[in-house]
Length: 161
Image (tube, rainbow, N blue to C red):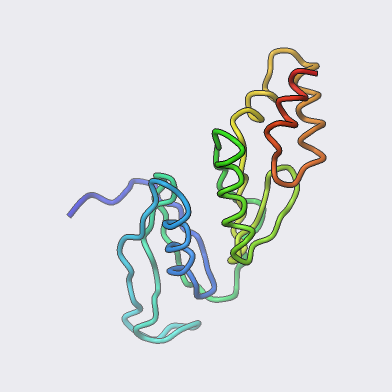
């Protein structure tokens, strides 16, 4: 048996942690579903035998999904930020999340059907808004502020001026 990760992100779901983990494993590389633990007894939001926790990995990050019931919801205070190489990769992740019952937000943010927030962020955008030339950074930032899904070509055009 391997040693568990020293730090694991625990994500609270109402009752769909396993479905969420399987979606992430199908959608992102270096992602998988590990052990599924069932409740040994009845608990406030479930019954003995219900899935209680799911161990999974998203883009190499160890996570645990906890089926804790409806008491707590995800918020924008936590998000996964996914660095993408190009428009095709940006589109693939964005469309998978939004197209599977999720919703678009602004500036590269979207929310999956379970309410977990994602930033689908092309590397060209990250580099542009951190550019040493403040004029380039400002143009890229202004372009981003008009977008939902990030348009790589529009960011590259903003960089060029």
